[in-house]
Image 1 (cartoon, rainbow, N blue to C red):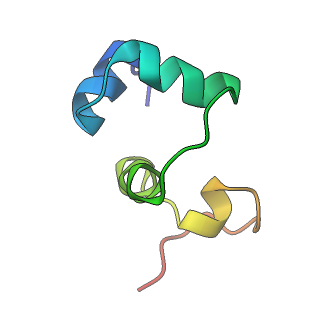
Image 2: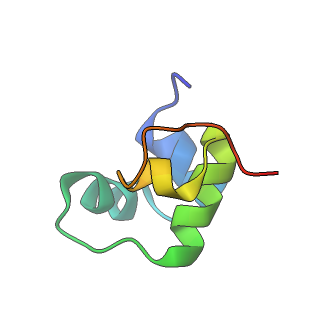
Length: 59
């Protein structure tokens, strides 16, 4: 999507620093944030968390 951490943080209503912790794996990502990220990237949640190779969102 070519977005900065700051831009994604604004989309998620969190700080850039908080989002950076999620990317580094130093904090667990709450399910609400995972759902919002799946919506942003237009992928299904299983793909986002590495449980599937199928990117398509479910109907």
